Length: 269
Image 1: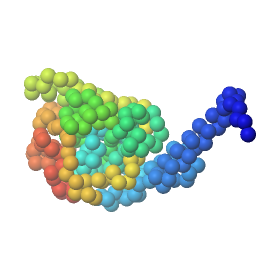
Image 2: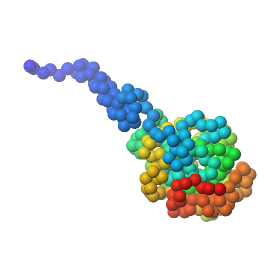
Image 3: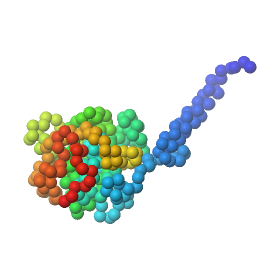
């Protein structure tokens, strides 16, 4: 049989082949997500219960619980620092402030989705003030490093605060100014690069179950955080109703060099 190259036929078939290939790739990705093959960017599966705190990790939470999302570099160590704080109900690692729904770890690490690694913190405001959480945020990493934290380099390691209320946004913005002044007073030359988003400006997506409470599950001691050793001013904390004093932070707060060489269990008051 004589083969005749038909440009029109090729052009007609190409979109179908691309569509078929795209569908196969989506099915493959959903297989690893544990979702139906035809699902559209299905959410990543995760355990319903926090490995350490034993509380649910999915919304809706009890009515008295508030939420906020923090990004301070690699989410493994970030999550541990927050789940240990008295008054934190639950935590979960994930991806935020990108443009691809339900991204995978590999996709986020490629830098193409625009997300940063993060931790959603659900907390009881009657036991821990938002100001206390901000103290942990600013002191458990170096917020002046842009798209990196220590050895970890990429947009997925940028610093951020993603608020769920207008009051959180105002307080987070105020704390950034206060912490910048504290850094300057301590001789810091660089400016804070942390992004702060208003409610509704960024969507949180769960990370894979293997990343949830990773340090407690595995005992892995990897840490690339670069705490500055500078704290928020006591006057600012007092003006915002902080519940933990200097003695608490001296004993339990992050230290320069590493943030995770502490027990997995929540801090006992």
